[in-house]
Amino acid sequence: MVGGLIIRGLIVGIVAGLLGFGFAKIFGEPPVDIAIAFETAHDEAERAAQIAHGITPAAPEQELFSRTAQGGIGLFTGVVVVGAGIGGIFAVLFAFANGRMGNLSPGAISILLAFYGWWSVYVIPALKYPPNPPSIGEPETIKLRTGLYFLIMAISIAATIGSLLLRRNLVAKCGAWLGSVIAFLVYLAVFCFFFAILPGINEVPENFPAATLWQFRMASLGIQTILWGSIGLMFGWLVERPLGFSAGAGPPAAMRV
Image (cartoon, rainbow, N blue to C red; front, side, top):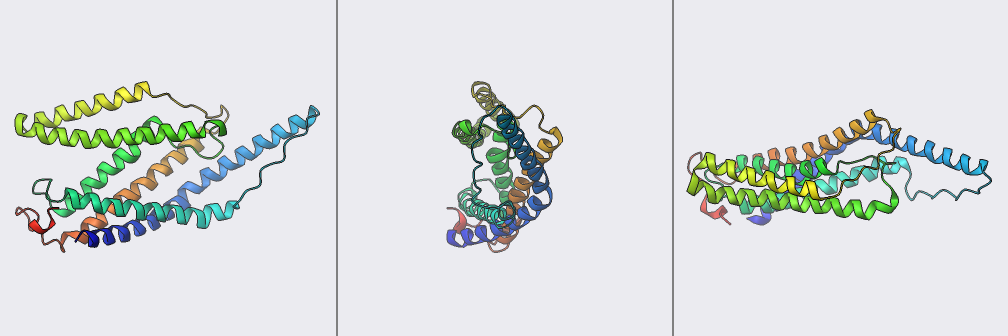
């Protein structure tokens, strides 16, 4: 049964990846092209300044893949593979959560899981370390930036899961409203603490177009929203009827893994 869920997850993940690719191609590529042009102009100006001072500039690095390949097959492969990966993991999480979230239908559970995933995997990490287009970021700090991003992602996921488990325990003692409020306040305190102690990174050039930076970050948010939203909706639709759920009766015992 879990294997069937994983197959469904991979299918909806691939479809979500195709939708995300279409969005990225339309809204994500223009700011990336502007950012690359900005970087190219900056490098050419630096090389000209070096030549003017009698310094022989270093030869520019050769690109392994052309910009056309990066924005075409490269972007397509990346987004679809990520979508399939998210879909497969999503199916495993659904198999674990189904039957453990009260009398919610499989479709409602799927949507909630998609929201939690979108929130903890992308939104919270992006608030601390927002995505930047090419030409932003020093090569010397790439390992630091990558490590900090995955660290805040892990903290965000752990805090989300912890707050949900805490709420579940508090509801039995304090009631649904008070238990939810306390769990949320604990969650808020945790990520505010880590937001405060983790170092900030600000490597945006002073003359970089603010509108381009905003458009890129909004496109990144849109891609993630399409991926998680599509997976949650489509997966819920696929499993709702096959699982044999009837409103008010709870999920069938066969699906309580």
